[in-house]
Image (cartoon, rainbow, N blue to C red; front, side):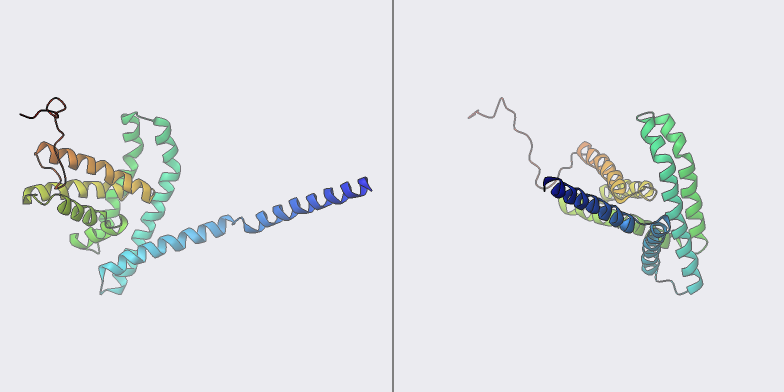
Length: 215
């Protein structure tokens, strides 16, 4: 009886393992399915940017869509091939700069292709679309947080944010784009602090020696 029960349990376990393996085989996407899904994603992203341009020339709209979509694919391929190299280089700035050289060239070529169909203002819209509108969103945040900004201060903040956008356009993921903007926010904060400009809610730190003084 014991042997029979053990045999039944073993058979059940084997069947469960076989079923799990079968399910994994069925649910694991094929390379073709992965490619199709990725293509659909970058097609949708590209079309969203083109829609924001409101181009009246349908042929130009198709060309711009294809240029943006090709850039997304090229960036994905580049990061897949080079991100491990950058990680291995660690803090070797010279090595990382050398690895990034083709990426900078790709960036310039991409903008040149867009310029065949778009005005500088429209290219700005493409850049914003590729970076989730972070320039405008972050700039508005600074204007709210620092109500005493001069026009010169605002222009300096915009300059930093647009530099961030230029780098973030080439990032491999949304997290990387956000990280680049955060780095530049640090530069902006340092700039404002050096100018003696602080957030509206900022309070100077009290001197510990004078904290208990009644004079």
